[in-house]
Amino acid sequence: MTMTFSYQGSAARIVFGRGTSAEVGKWVETLGCRRVLVLSTPHQAGDAEALSQRLGALSAGVFTDATMHTPVEVSERAVARADALQADCVVSLGGGSTTGLGKAMALRTDIAQIVVPTTYAGSEVTPILGQTENGVKATLRSPKVLPEVVIYDPDLTLGLPVGMSVTSGLNAIAHAAEGLYAPDRNPITTMMAIEGMRALRQALPAIVGNPGDATAREKALYGAWLCGTVLGQITMSLHHKLCHTLGGSFDTPHAETHSIMLAHTIGFNAEAVPEAMAPVGEIFGGTPGQALYDFAQSIGAPMALKDLGLSEADLDRAADIATKNPYWNPRSVERASIRSLLQNAWAGHRPPY
Image 1 (cartoon, helix red, strand yellow):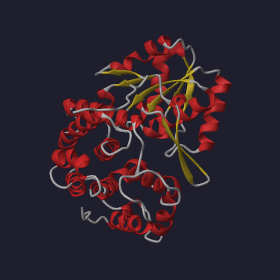
Image 2: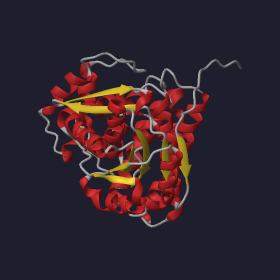
Image 3: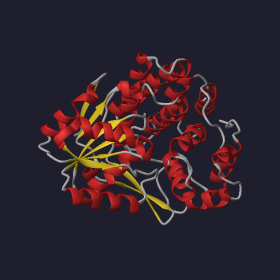
Image 4: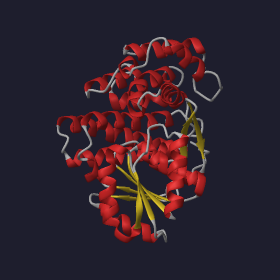
């Protein structure tokens, strides 16, 4: 068999292991930086302050207003704060919201980034940034936003609530699942996608059963890293486009939206590329869409968009936005079929595929 493909590994340094978050200062100095601004959401402000104190003289201060969907206004305030403090590095502590803020700052200033993830978002290993302005979320890809160092410490995820662990983990699975049919996929990304999904398939039920299971937490974070790495290498299609539409225009929560949409979008596309999506069915047991739906339900994930506050009246506008600008997808993206998909996801129905 002959193969033709292009692959470029990520330039980010990955540091993985229990207790590795104690090495943040070491990596700041390795990057040649001297004044760190620690970023977090308001919810994790206490953790950010504690990290700032541990960094001692390396810390210039904290900014704790990271916000879901990376509003441009928040990013501009954070840049102003970094400028005022003469910061030359940001340490993003938390999930996708905090990572997104650090990326948005790097896009504008080229400031160095170290990310310490506490969820399974995976965006920390991608050169992708989604920003929201005037109710519209736009996504860009640039090497400027790829963090220099990512420190994965499974111990930091031990306190991650079960519900957030579930939705964050399903979000990571979505990254890998879309990688299986991407037009620019290659044998390496496919291998990572399968390994990442399998790790999360094993880890998430164990975490639901025992949130303090350190082995399961380690495996879930490993899976999230693999899935995020896949997303950083491939072209996003229907799943991510729909989730960005719902999050950016209707302010639905990021991970929960991915969790609900996953079964519907992957099932929809699997009808067009059954061979590429076969690993999903093998890992989760059944046809891809229904297998993912049953798995999500079995671990207590949210199942319906209506439970996120989205009204049925919003679905027409969502379908319009999601199909306004053409993009590559293995199955034709037509308004009628997308509107039907959204209806099923809104109601929480098991997908027909």
